Amino acid sequence: MTASSSVQDARRIPLGRPGVGQPAARTAEMLRVDHAGEFAAVHIYRAQRAVLEGRRGKDQISADLTEMEGHEAVHLARFEQLLTENRVRPTAMIPLWKIAATALGAGTALMGEKAAHACTEAVESVIEEHYADQIAEIRERDPDLAAELTQFREEELAHHDHAIAHGSREAPAYRLLSGVIKLGCKAAIKISERV
Image (tube, rainbow, N blue to C red; front, top):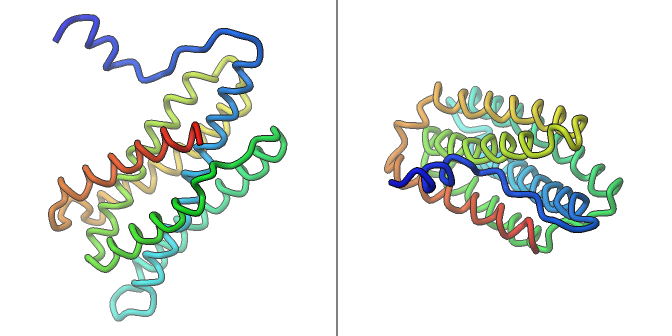
């Protein structure tokens, strides 16, 4: 690996684009993708809860899913408000993301608790990294939004750590499952920024 490629690999923060209106355009991309991510998270947890709630021995995970869904709903409501305040349209992919998130949530829950936790770990690892990049990018330009994103990131990290503590890495085909989910999340981020 060359020095230039290692620097490039270590730096995930996009370079600012020149031109009038570009900071606002970049903020719009960020809000659009963050809204989409929180929307998907709500539907993943909701679908997992629908599969597991009421089953014998699933009271604890059902309560955990309800709590995490509640955190994501708060994040989603805030991004809906920010979209409105900044006159940013949500991604056109919302209907597809709802289907994909619901299928992912239900599918992993049907595989069992550990797979549901593996889904949480994978999603939250991508999201917390994404938030960290955004925070670094906007810290000086928009410290208030950076502070909100920092709080959201901390809650996502708590979900991530909770999933690991509850056996996410013991899920069947953990590496494959985690890799596919992470790849899907990263693709959804790129698509939602633009579309």
